[in-house]
Length: 136
Image (cartoon, rainbow, N blue to C red):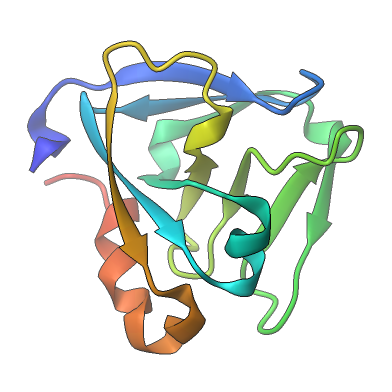
C-alpha cells in the first residue's frame, strides 16, 4: 500500500541516549499494539521493517539481550536505562521491530496503529510476515 511512497529516515533511541538507531519509513506506516505477556507489560508499539530499512548508529556495546520460550526473538535493551527501542521479532526474524514510542520526532509520519492478538501468537503470527519483506 504505502510502500511505493518515498521513504524517510527517522532517528530514535533509548531513554539515556546510549543506544541510537535510524529507521526508513513511508509517510504512512503500519504499527501494532500487542497483548502478549511481554508487550502488554512494556507498552511496546511495533513498527516492523525489513533489515535494509534499519540501522544501529550508536551503542551496540550497551545492548543486553533477553530471550524466552522458543528463543527466536532477540529482545534487545539498553543495559543502562533498560529501554527496548528495537528488537528482532520472532514473527519477522529477517527484519526489525522498532518501538514507535522511541522515535525522536515523527514529523511527516502517520502510524496506522492496529491491535495484534499476541496472546494467541501461533494463530496470528502470519499476519505480520509481510512487514519485513522488501517491496517489489
